[in-house]
Image (cartoon, rainbow, N blue to C red; front, side, top):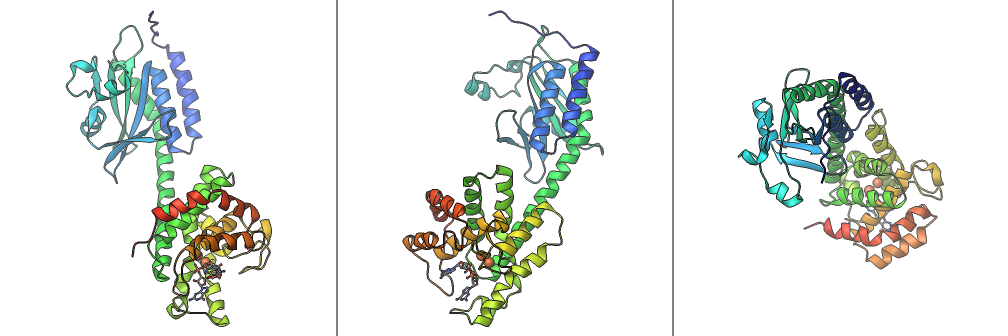
Length: 374
Ligand code: C2E
Ligand code: FE
Ligand code: FE
């Protein structure tokens, strides 16, 4: 096999790469894609065969990265491997032949059939000078088949150019994660209040997600619904215990009080401009609306009801019927199916009911996985 070596780049070539990538990175809002773009930029600048950008997850005490063509993150314990030691010590590491270095772990090569020879690992810092991650590149593709001080400088340069965007994307991610945590905590509060058993909110979340995907919703939007659907009953926090947990039929008056949980939930959440919280406000308000206009609180009809509300309605009732409540026993599946057939186009959006029947095996699997243990 003839080996074709690459030639080191000219300054103009380098500038071109830097311009191209920093523009792309600056307009990117997703952390995964920023990491992949940074890795590709590094790989092109120093002519390596592979390149990865690692970041520190302080909460989990791990290092993580995303690879270009996989969806999954790779995670390793903090402090392990060459990346770990570069990040811990703040020193770059250049290795000419991995097989002569005791720090190299050859297991991966054995598994993948890939041959690692030269390696460079360069830690990088944020604006406050704290180390936040590292570049790692493998196998130099020039005739001189190892990395040099110049490569080290170039990778540091790549990191400093991409650093600002990287930090703002990480900050954005932090904010989204915070919203998620607040939302799931609030959902749990609502659940405890109405004495529903442990996994109820989780089941409604997973049912909603499966139904959303089955209806052709894109993954990002379906994930928003998965995050917010557990909040649909948050308004129940304001309903008196005696009513909420009454072990029998409700009077009309009591039922009216319970119905107000939709308005209350909406009221609690609607002030926020945040994407997740406003989606949660919609679900809280609309999950008892009915396709035929006979639901509450506003008697909305058909597609005027937000798709999040129409999906959560099905997920919610499926779970309410499946479970025992203070006021009713759990229903057998045949009776549940009969109700959904009956209410298709009345209570529920016919498309969502069709998705429900298509996905029933998956829904039942979720139900048995997230079963409530007494
Ligand atoms: P939930 O227990 O989570 O029930 C959610 C929804 O599932 C109900 O909304 C209803 O659409 C459906 N569902 C639940 N159980 C049954 C049932 O036995 N038959 C039928 N056909 N559908 C059922 P809905 O009716 O708007 O009720 C809202 C909430 O009001 C319920 O949430 C529950 O917290 C409370 N609630 C409703 N009826 C009673 C009752 O008779 N006694 C008590 N203590 N609470 C009730
Ligand atoms: Fe509700
Ligand atoms: Fe509910």
